[in-house]
Length: 119
Image (cartoon, rainbow, N blue to C red; front, side, top):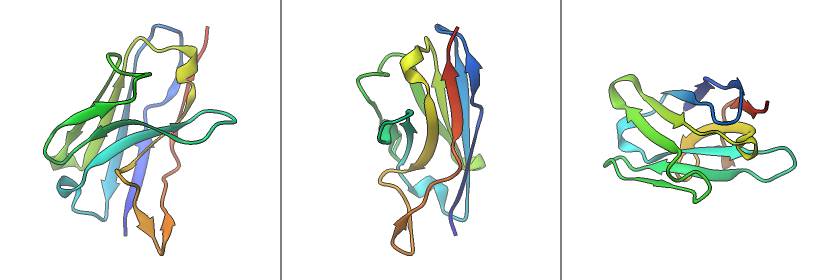
């Protein structure tokens, strides 16, 4: 069964950087399109970046040019390098397949990792 464990979040000042990691298990990782999502306080979860199994990446307009998604298939891990962080990037960040995995018909989500951008 799929398991996703996100890490790397924390408190950072505006303009700073963070690198998030997500370790996957229970799946044939290399065959999946993966993505990062985020959910800010009081808002719906949104798609931030996608990375196809073939290597093509795409980004939400709000993070384009600042965030970079990458993967290491040997480690079954997907990363999100976040630079020039802004207060509006504050959210809980989740990785998942694109579209998200479903377990018994229900979307599966890991615990996420919290990112707070504040001075």
